[in-house]
Image 1 (tube, rainbow, N blue to C red):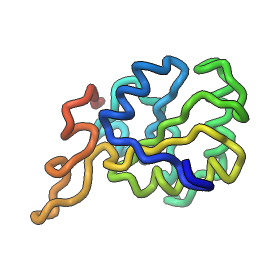
Image 2 (tube, rainbow, N blue to C red):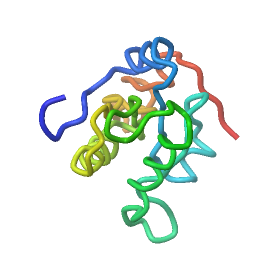
Image 3 (cartoon, rainbow, N blue to C red):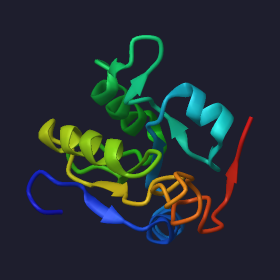
Image 4 (tube, rainbow, N blue to C red):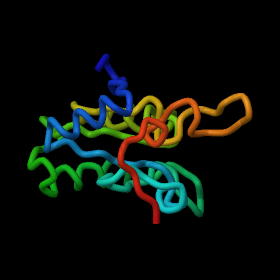
Length: 142
């Protein structure tokens, strides 16, 4: 990580980290609607960064991440912290949320640069240029 930037991971690098570091936690920061209806990585914890009905940054986001870390996922404090890997739709919100976590003192923060659905293609469709789902990694939907 450089300064206040979370480290970029490809979807496969994130999956590899989750498999090799059992204390790592994958946090899906998309809205509740996205998490439930579009799908999400298997095993991801849902803590929205921006959510309905107000569509503003979750004022409890950092606190909820700290509670997750202190709740025994890695048994670590937020200072030495288990790796926190953030995922959103295309990697933009997770980058912003990761910056906030680092500013608030978390040390081991990563984000999946392709997100869950990847960028838009020339037809304005997702899931064809990249992303967790496009890469064939485990996911589920409600």
